[in-house]
Image (cartoon, rainbow, N blue to C red; front, top):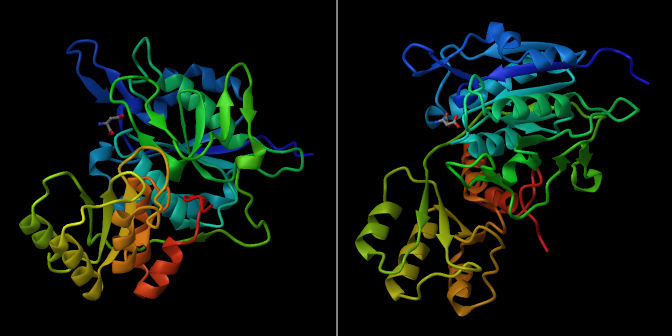
Length: 346
Ligand code: ASP
């Protein structure tokens, strides 16, 4: 049995959760994280060692970028042996991108990395921030009786649900219930008790060390199809100098228009070495290009299936793989493999 007091490192990157309302002007301002306990005194009731690492300055998550993902990974790596788990406070707008990126960057992760945030600042009366923060900390510290963490994964905890980070999407700009994992079940649900779902949680190899990665290549784009899309625009986009990969958001189970020009543009782009990954515009479900003729033509042109990837996951996975200088053959193989539980292959 482990008797040592649980320890959690709280990394505050920015976002609504770390704000309070200025009583005089009513404007939202970042609060000083050194005074976290003043705003969330409930944290004292955990008998945990909780240290904080605030970004200075804190950033709105619209400004998140690979260099800042690398900064988060460096902080986690540097502190890896000193904490049981990590909680990352992050703006909700791009939280799913960061969670996806981190899931690839932290190879063989053996500790919990829980992202959370809030729709209302922690200093406001009806805030969802306290609940999210307190439960995220509890999950980050939770262990099996043998001392192994309950959730050694990159997750998002939001409004009662613990979700695999690279399966999530922000779906609501208004409600507290802002995230969904459409293609993978929740890893835990917080009610009176936190009910974990062990069979859905990844099991890392504890005999191997966690391996951090830092490199990304952002020469990528997401192209969403719509009825009436113009040949000139598709042509211009696929011929942008330096373009390396495209996430193609198709219809239904991976279908695209059957126009001759469209397939020609796709084939020529692939011939020039551009990687094209097919994901569906539907929130739920998977790509099956062999199902209809309209998908089959993409498969035959050399388009790769992104299976049931979210757009956030597909684009960050491509950026990650390209950043590591893999050949197109290797990228194709890795897109077809689950690196961090991000796709389901039937
Ligand atoms: N714009 C904010 C951000 O994503 C919204 C939030 O914190 O939820 O940083």
